[in-house]
Length: 108
View 1 (cartoon, rainbow, N blue to C red):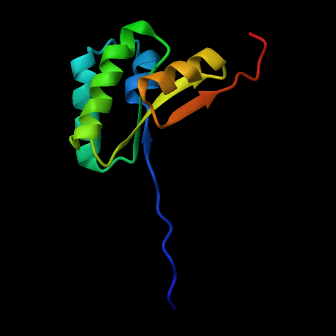
View 2: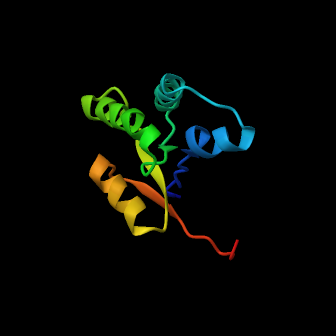
View 3: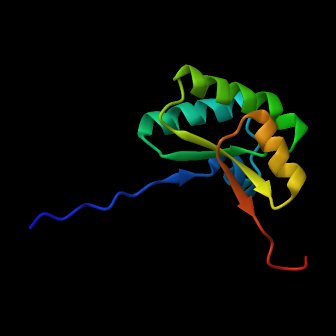
């Protein structure tokens, strides 16, 4: 019997949600090092930040440049956005090719 195997893809959110959850502040260099290790481990995707916040811009651009140079490859770098037009436009302006969009289901 010749069965096609299903492939499992892991998306890591340490640099975005993990930092918030643990209330742990990571320096941008530490986040970049995490991305390097995730890539080395074969993780499919790193949700690596918020493209709509000014203090993340240089870090995001630097990691995208590392990906372009092949240093962070084949990992997919994705940004996290609210379902807000300005957030998505900012992600596009930074050159992000992958974004995860969150839509709130509550009124809070």
